Length: 212
Image (spheres, rainbow, N blue to C red):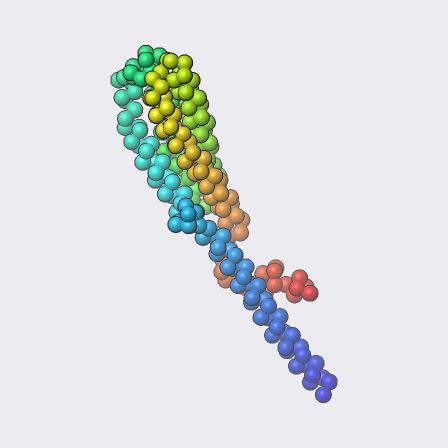
């Protein structure tokens, strides 16, 4: 009688433990799924699609600006709103302009390859480019506003150009943070590949000793 009761008690205990293991495994898989599908851009896209959308936007504007770059050599810095201050500075503007555009295209291509191949090291160049663009934007705003207040540039033009650089810089700040988050996400995915088919016996969270 006592042996029968002990046997029944052990079966009940094994069933409870098996149910607990399955529950923990499902919970862990759910957490991993939520992490892999982390939503961004006001919940419209997951982090991977958000970064790809940002790349499309940056590449589009980089190509448009690159096509327009010869105009900088034609004008040679003789824009009316600079009041002659940058006359003859066309090569400087051209070099800065083309450098930003080409490095954007190259780093964007590397980020896309890194995203497709799950190679975090290829994501970093674009993060550095975004950080560099933010610095260039801040410096450009300082220079433009200084020229405007010192009378070496038309003040309305100074405000307009500073606002344009400010909007671009703010967008890049947001996108840079998102790129860093994506870099960490790819690193985590590479270190702990997502799998919803983790066996309870293979899951360290379901080890019997850890539950006691």
